[in-house]
Every structure is written in C-alpha cells, then in structure tokens.
Image (cartoon, rainbow, N blue to C red; front, side):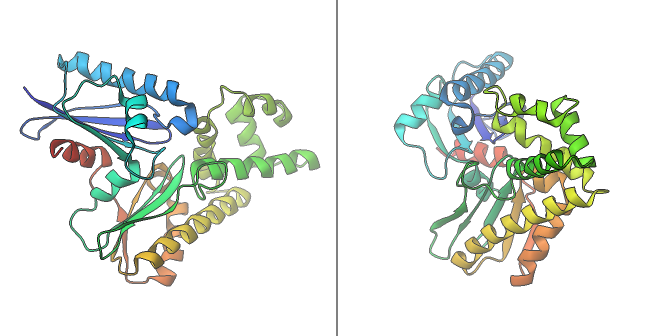
Length: 296
C-alpha cells in the first residue's frame, strides 16, 4: 500500500492527513505546533517527529510516497536547509514545504485570483493575481505584526489589564486574565507571562476567553472589534494589490470561533469591496496539502 501525507502546521497545532494511493483519507491526527520561530527549531522538529511516528506506527508504514508540509513559520517555499532541519527525519520518496497560507490558498479551488486570510495564533493574507503571481500581506510575526491574531488580541487585552490593575479598578477582563493564568492578583501573572515556558500559543489561547467575554463586556468587545479592523486593513492591502479578487476564503481559529471578530472584519472588507464573496474555507488545508503531496 502506498501512502501520502499532507500537513497543516499552524501556530498552535499541527494537523496531518494520510491517504492511500486511491486518494481515500485513512487517518487524520493533530499534534503540537511546528512553527520554529515560535517554539524553536528543535522543539518544532520534535513535535513533528512525534506526530509522524504516531501515524507511522498506526499505519505500519516505514516510508511515504509523497509528503507536503504547510508551515506557519514560512511565507514561501522552504529552502533545502530549512526543509532538512525540520523534516529531516521523515522517510519519503518526495517532500516539499511551503507556508500554511499556500496550502490554504489551494483550498480555494479553480477560481480567478483567489485570496485567503488566515487568522489564528498568527495572521497573514495571500492571493494570486491575474498573472499567476503569489502576493502576500501581513505575516510579520508576533513581535512586529500579526494584527488581529489570537496573540495580538491577548497581548492588547493584557495591556488593558495592566492599566486596570494600576488604577485599582475592578473589571471582568481583569478577572478573566487572573483566572486564565491561575493567579489571585494580576501582578502575580508577570512571572508566568515572561516565563520561557509560556509560549506564543499559550498567550494566544487567552483570546478565546476574551471572545467569550466580549458578548457581555464592552472592554473585551472593543478589543475584538479593534483587532478585526486592524486585520481588515492588512487584507485590504492585499486585495488592492490583487485588484481582481472575487472570493476571499477565511481560515484559522479566530475566524472559526469568534463571530464578533468575523462580522466586524467582513463589514470593513465589504465597505470597500461590496461584491466580494467572503466565506470560511470548505476544504481543510491539510487535505489540500495531501493533494499537493500526491502530485509531487
């Protein structure tokens, strides 16, 4: 039996799909992030190896026919050194790695000038112009970019919490932060927030609590809407570059799980491009990666 492997390596988790030689999906499994900018190359490689070993053991498979990896640490095709550093332990006859946005873009199918906006732990947008060129916007990483991402939402909320704490003001947002980090006094969260063990995705996880709180708390609501508008500006830059996009696909945990964010984002996009079709991806990126693997 011949097996093919497609991988979607996001900022928080990695999803893998395996098909047989007839294209039938046999296994789907999730593991930890392989974003080496976030967790370091050694940890990213260990996370990937662990996921691959689990799959190989279950399949009884020693080698794959083809493997395609989408990785959120990239915005283009990986060079040989990076491919070897992250994927060197994968036994396969053919392998290629590109950005997670690249495989998400492939999920759009055969439409003219497709674009995809991804907003999860990090954020970025990608599209194809009428000449077939790939164009990106955003994706600058959590230190200088990633507007609208789970990380950006969480960090901006924590900054508000700092001000509330300094003022001695009670707030549902402050209560939520103390609960998330398991402290009775927000100042005690400092050691946790700055601990090397508190990874980017751990901080970004606080965004889910902020999203729930936004249903009843105006401070949390304002943070969510502000970040949605910020990411909309990033995506509008991409759409202006493309110039002919008729459909915008959305992917990532923030879009999937936060209706307030998604609606605010759509409103700003539609205010400039009223006729554009905006919807969540219907084909998971790991399945697009799997199709790419079958064509290597």
